[in-house]
Image (cartoon, rainbow, N blue to C red; front, side, top):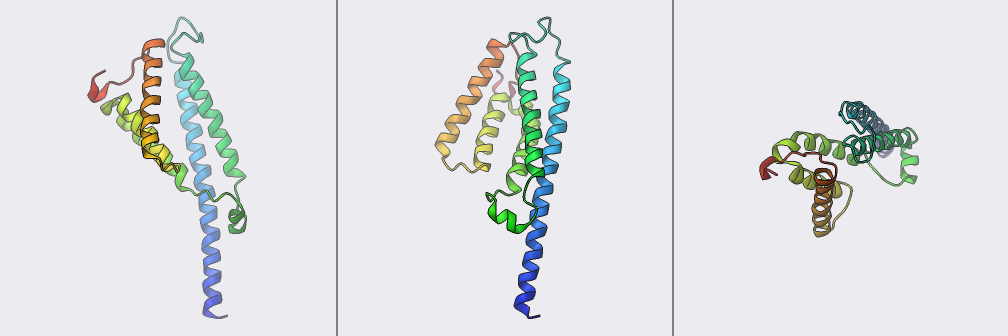
Length: 173
């Protein structure tokens, strides 16, 4: 066997290993997201409310969000389980990598650590902007505007309409 053939075989073996590692990372990330969302979903029921699951009560929106999170996490697990197992299948797939789910998961962990000291408005706007960048957006101005507007809309919805306090952080709101 020639050196060129050895190089090609080594490259194919490396590629196969990367494909399987990418698939395992997606499955692992999905399992972590399922555990987190299920944990938060259980925690939602610790919110005391005389209104029960009434949409005007403080439990409704967190229940809605965590349920959606759990459903999407399960869908992500299914997608990971159905992902291509070989380099040839991956070449036919859409070219996604392990980077996005790992980076978004890291952003969520960082967000959880920063939301209290920085405050909801700053931490959430940074999360939305960073997530857009990780997921491939290259329109900086649009990403900043969307992150800011979406953050303020959610903040107003929680604080004014649902009467839920969010961390004020450095802004002291």
